Image 1: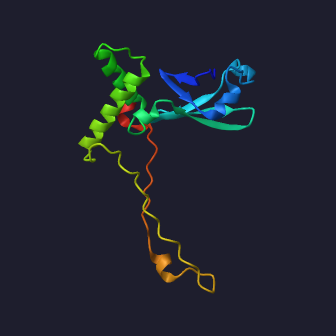
Image 2: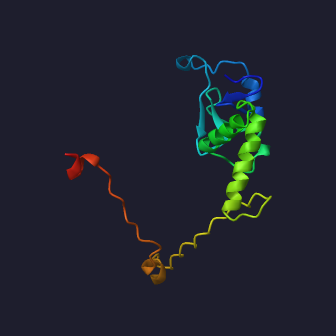
Image 3: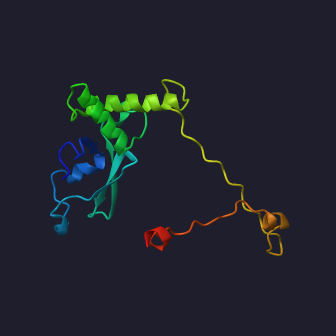
Length: 168
């Protein structure tokens, strides 16, 4: 359900301005009993995706306390931060307390990885690929691009545990 405060999943509240028109309303999907379909990446809980069946698209809703945290975080890290909050005798449902514990964990991990203290590292830029060779006037690629191999692809085989001798 999209409530007045947004969507709550696993003690986290998510919201977006685009959700305003759908607060306290049914999704209109009978097989889901009017509930809204929500997806998320367990490796990045900083936002969720709400399927908007009425407009045939998705709405991205951010975690409301994301500004308190240094960077995206995983489900495992969220659970660790909640455990720490509870071990300190605080309420594990207090999102602000968990956000502070989560931020401390992320910053400690960043220092262990050699990042400068205090700042969130800038996003890494992708190494640009070299442009494809232009075809010559006769439509054939230049000899250099035809003989240059960027990488050798070695496919992995499919693991079949029942094909091994030990499993028979």
